[in-house]
Image (cartoon, rainbow, N blue to C red; front, side, top):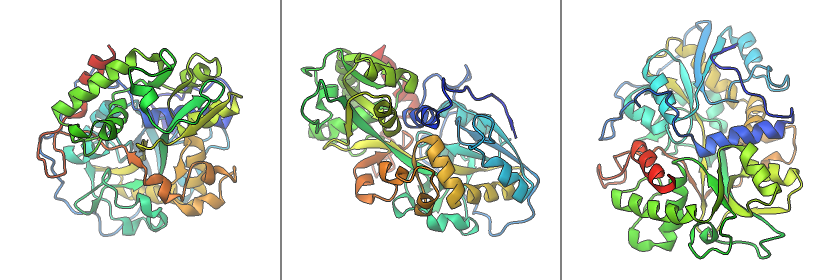
Length: 408
């Protein structure tokens, strides 16, 4: 397997460190990720590709070119135990190459080239790829592993449009409210201390440094400010987005720092520089493992989460290999490997019997559907609200500008 960019190894070889790093990237998203190129524009009105999915598979083509965030395509180079590429190549003859992507704009640009067979699309970009016509419908009957996907992950709006599936989900994870119990004596039940100007934790609050944090603030305002009429934290009108910006400006006065990955989030909590804030569930687990007295919860308002979907390129040069890959990552053994490496719940219940950590699925709520009912899963912000309001919502590009206004 070859890569366009070598994986940056974390400071120790412990799997949980790599886990937290990748999970942070998946849940948080990135800013300025397009390498200076102009982002690929999406149509204002949501459109669905008219071409139908494949009806059968042919002979594998011997090659597979993928786009993915770091950690989704592993061949044992970082850790010999993390290798689901070598068995795939041996079984199918498809030689895997991967181009690593750092965020939604770069992902959209790469897939627009038409050179790639598939992409591990995070929730903040998957629908955008559908709207741009750069991914194709997937016939999940040709992906036997899809039958084992958890009910709470099937036919979800971040990869399914009008009943047409555009990929297969590899896992899911949630954001949580995390606090130091030696400072915060009573369990927190609301996001209020993270956003309210009168928070008793001024200067001690942390949050992800990404435009997608807008959705977290919007979810809080959905309950705190019902007058705003927020339906979905990912489908905001200009007025709603402006209200979120004001809330984030207030949060900025509370912040003891923002984080982009575990290397910032964990030390902030262990050093007591921050005492409360939003992290991924993987980072919360890592912070506990590092000895900090912390507790986490999903507050009454709910929380946000993310699921990454393997999608088929609309002009895939090697579609048969891509279909084989999608089935491969859903097999119980590989799905377990991916979940533990990335720091998420596996997408199939069968994977729970194959995890190295036998408590993994309990910790990450793999089959706990009541838990996931409280999680607003990440969906790409688009101008088309996709809920009957027409083209009155705001795009990811608008969110990037709003984030700049909010935090400077």
